[in-house]
Length: 300
Image (cartoon, rainbow, N blue to C red):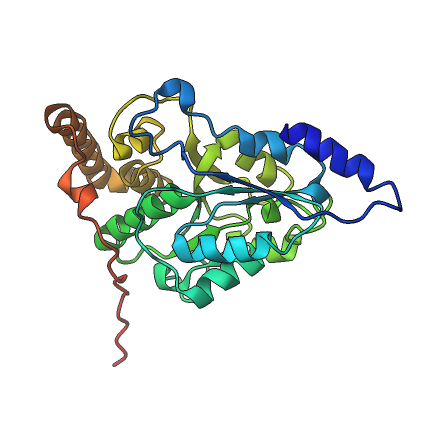
């Protein structure tokens, strides 16, 4: 039905006597990274990829990270005409990360460097960590806290993406970021670890026409089950521990072996714990954002 509606919109646009019609707003609330009762057959974020293949002028895809971002998305979506808005948002209680003002800016721009979750302070970062989606945002921020505690010298830039199709090149989507805008956010050559709600191929396709191909995506990998919320993320390696491991490997390689081994040990503990207790480990359930430590430079 979504495909038929898109095709109708496109052909109707060719008729001068047709009026503009309000946007069709689709809200996907059963997010693939938290399935408490639906089984593997219900776990598929492919609607993001499917709609992204349609003509760019008719499709918008929003992945708000929290309630404030969702409200800002809905305010924008209800004012749009002649498009299909796909909005992916969790129906479960989630932490609130972004202020009302910050959420509005995120939605208006589509993508934003989050200063309070970055410590590059305007310098070239060692790593760019990006997230698009509710659970990806949560896991990426949790990974940043792990990394910051272990590697205080690591310069991290965190990027949240609400309007995922804004990352496309302007030659593909007129709304897309220019090369200069894109490189200013993602750099031209630094590794990018991207936590994404959907299939990884969509992000790789978006980055194909950009200069920086040091891209490492953690999205849905067609691995699902009836399991705990956090374990759904572990199955696709879209969890904080796998994300932190990947960052450490890309920046420090063998020098971070001890840290990566500790992440593996926590994952092994998680595997045993959920099978014994049926709930996620306390390290995950009780996690809260902590302000980043920043290296102090002393001048004599």
